Image 1 (tube, helix red, strand yellow):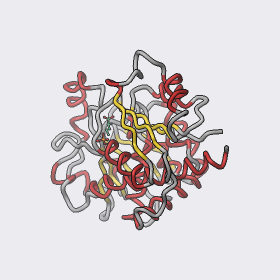
Image 2 (cartoon, rainbow, N blue to C red):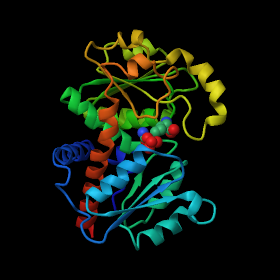
Image 3 (cartoon, rainbow, N blue to C red):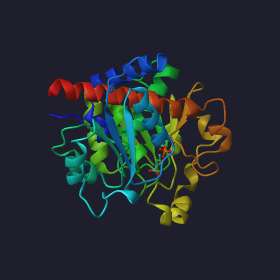
Length: 311
Ligand code: CP
Ligand code: NVA
């Protein structure tokens, strides 16, 4: 069976730790692994805009000895003209893995169904698992561990980052708290999945409308844009309803004294986070952005090794 990363809980706790360990090794010695050495390519497809994902996958695939094939749906047949599954049947004949940033999670599931090469979710409306590997790597670097830590995600609790924090955080044995107003809280099915995973790892999940309750004593504070890609026409409504959930210095003061702040970027200062927080001493956002490279190289190397072993 080909392994894919479509959502964060596609990895077990042990597998997540294995990938993070490989990421640390690759960060320490950037060209230590070249599993793609030879004429191997990875297709990286974008239905939405990107800076970090585009650059980190392009550079990471080259670091691993392969060639990145960057495709935008605007100039390919995917999206309207050709189905994800037909696209996968073609690409798997030519590339070693398919990385795709898209809208609906179902598209990724169709792409992966029966695919003989790994399919990686580079952000969908529901999840951003590559970002979470980078975030967990960053938290590990700054805190020395993951299991047992409390992470508070504040703001739009119904978006891809919140869902991924639920699943990946629970997989890591963290206590995940989501502070978001009604109407912006995660769907019950994602909370249930996270709770199931947390029950196996010693983690826990709390969803609250109180930002203060979420952040109280937390080791890690996270937020994300209030207006995700595809939601631009809802901006005024979202800003009005999420206005009380900005991560301010006052809110950070309610977290642990040595708490760190993460944001996947791009950030909107003055909306989801105050400039003094994201640009302040507790912010680790640039390490987080760099870690996309190391985490995704580890993920690709790991997936390709698993795939080779399965052949
Ligand atoms: N964090 C993130 O995925 O950034 P990009 O949208 O720039 O890829
Ligand atoms: N939630 C954001 C993340 C961007 C990296 C979005 O989907 O636009």
